[in-house]
Image (cartoon, rainbow, N blue to C red; front, side, top):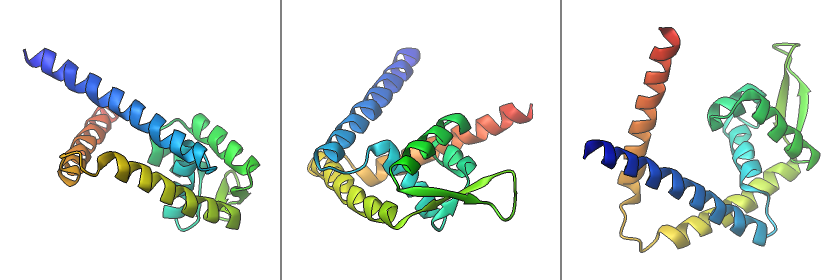
Length: 151
């Protein structure tokens, strides 16, 4: 019974995340905003004071460095970020938010927030409690991952 509950939890959580991503991305596209993937990258750069390395994008989004680099390539091609030499480390570059990227971030954040509000408001779900619970589970997963790497 416990195994079945865990499998059900996993299936519901993963399918919900996939469906939620698709819904928000669709709303962004319909509004003429950047894709959700680019929005996520722009958010990371913005959280790091408008400049960070690809490594920070990789870590913050839980994707590989290769995937983050390709995401930065696409975001740079759209003129939303630019790469600059890293004065601290000549082997790496900094990803810097451009003015167009800041504008795109602001607009896309508004569209995404409206999409999430439309979906979640009136759902009867305690979103704050759910968010807190998922944050605890994510921290436990990160701690487990650290133990496995250290072993």
